Length: 519
Image 1 (cartoon, rainbow, N blue to C red):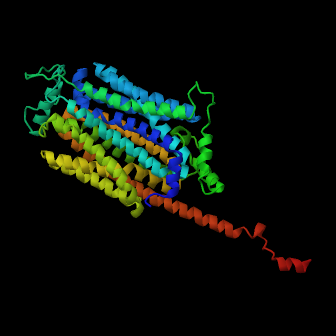
Image 2 (tube, rainbow, N blue to C red):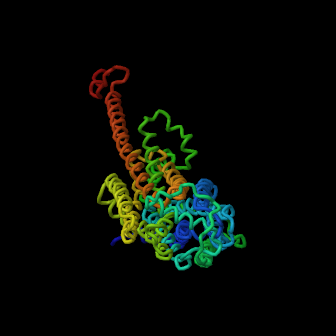
Image 3 (cartoon, helix red, strand yellow):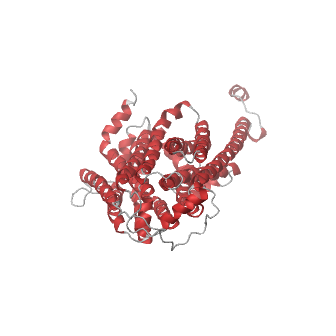
C-alpha cells in the first residue's frame, strides 16, 4: 500500500481532530492570498498610493509573527487550544466582512493586523496539536496540513477574480493612473519619465467603474464560516463546552494516546530528551540556552546563513504573490485585470503541487541537491521573465515554474540544517522566524521600489534577491564543511579518551588471572 496500515489506523483514531486542524489551515491560506489580486481595488477604496497600501502587507505579517510567538500560551490544555482556534477562525470571517467598510488605509492596516494575529495563533497551535497527537508519525499529516494552506491560497484569488474592477473603481483619485503612465515612460526610456510622483495628480479623464470587490470578501467570509463551526463541534464532541459536566482534559491525554502507537517507551524518552536539549522552543528561549556555550563559530553561522537564505526566498514568495497582479496590469504587459487575477492562483497552485512533488523527490535525491536546483531554477526563471517582459504567455509559464522552484525550499532547508546540527540547535525557531520576517520586509521593500521606479523593477528585485539567496547558500555549504570537520575532530578525541580509560592513574590494567595468582 502507498500508506502504511499503522498510519491509516492512527488517522482513523484521530480523524476528527486531524480534519479540524486541516480546516483551520484552509482559513490561513484563504486569508494570506487575497491581498495580491485585490491590492489595486483596495488602493482605490482607501484613496492611497501603492507604497502606502504595501504597509497593509507589513501589518499582517508582523502581527502574524506576534501571534505565532504568543500562541504557546494556549497549548497547555486542549480546551485553551481549541478555544483559541475557534476565536481565530471566527475573527478571519469577521475581518473579511469588514474589509469593504475600511475606507482609510490605516483602518485597513489595523484590520489586517488583527487577522495576522489570528493567523499566527492558527499556525502555531495547529502544528503543535498534530505533533502532539502523531509525534514521530506526524510528518505525513504536517505535509497535508501545509497543503491546505496552498489550497486556501488557491481558492482566494479565484473568488476575487470575477469582482475585480477592469478599468478602475469609483473612488479612484488618480494615483493608479499616474503610476501606470510612470511605468510606461520608464520602460520605454522616455526622456519625460518622472521619478517623483506627486500625490495630487488628477486623471485626464475616462470612465469610472464602481468596484464590486466587496462581494468577494463577503463570499470568502461565508466560505470560511464553517471552519469555526467545525472547531466548535469538535469542542462539543470532546465535552469541552462550559455547559458540559466534564472537566478540561490536559493535552497529556493525547500524548498517552499517541504513545501507545510508538514502538517503545525508551525511544520516546530519548526522542523527547533530544527535543528538549535541542532547544526547539521559541526563539527567545533558544537564545538563553546554556548548552550553546562553547560551540564553534560554524554552529552559529549555520543558523544565521540558513535563516538568511529563507529570509530571501520566502521574501520572494511574499513579494511575487503580492505584486504579480500589479505587474501584469501595468504597461508594457497591460493584461486585463480579470485575466491577471488568475496569476496569483496559478502561483499558489504551483506551490501546492511543488510541495506534494517534493515528498517523493526527497527520498530519491539529497536535500542539498534539491536546494541547489531550486535556487538556481528560481533565478533562471525570474531572469527569463525579466528578458521576455513583454510576453504574457511566458508570464503565466514563468509564474508556474517560479512557484514550483520556490515551493520546497523551506522544508528542504529546515531538514538540511537540522540534519547538519544533529537536531541539537535552534534551527527550527530561527528559520521559521527568519522566513516570516523576510516575507514581511520584502513585501514593503518591493512595493516601495515599484512605486518609485516602475513595474519593471519588480522582476529585477526578484533576480537580485534570488541571487543573494544562492550566494548565502553557497556560504552555508562552506560552513557545513567546517562544522563537519569540527565534529570529526571531536569524535576522534572522544575515541582516544575511551582507549586511555583502562589505564587509570598510569597503572596497567590487571587481568583476572594475574590477580588470582597474587592472592
